[in-house]
Length: 219
Image 1 (cartoon, helix red, strand yellow):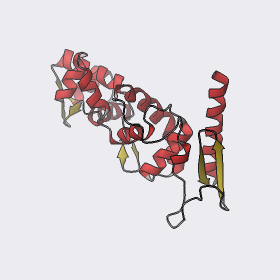
Image 2 (cartoon, one colour):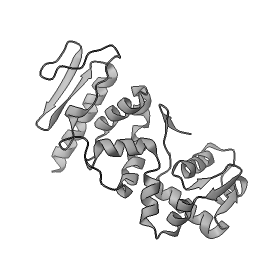
Image 3 (cartoon, helix red, strand yellow):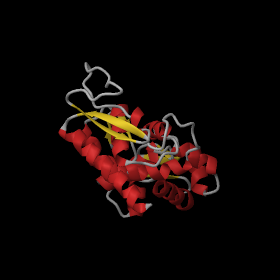
Image 4 (cartoon, helix red, strand yellow):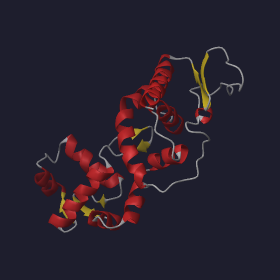
């Protein structure tokens, strides 16, 4: 089961998981044994790929159970394809995605900012986050389409100035108008970001600049 810090996240998208729930509902009456489901999917019941599919069903709140998997009430509604409220509840069933959505509001997803926010929320090692960021970004980006719009908790289109710093527990907050020794700071017309100067954080800065360059080239 995939985790960032203590937070679980699904490794299969909401659409692929709802499609599997639809098959369980349509072909199997809403419940099935693990072994039979693995057989239906052409997978080994002891394999990692199968465990990933089952784990996603549970994390999204589409199914419950271990030896026997049963669709939840929302799982049945989502599998029918006719209940947008059920899809919204399912999209909101992953705590780490809720926290990301509340932080980002309707802002575009910038991988560099996403890394910073995930590190702040989870306290996970930055290298671990960077190794998983593409998958998290893809699955979160799809699920947030079903999430109701929230009041933006961050100002501006990217809200860099509210992004947290990678600082030691005994460090003092970064001064607003100056760069302290051992820190890096990026300033843009829509905000700024301050990070302690480490190899990992330099990579974050480079990724953020590359993302902004792509946006400028796409205009």
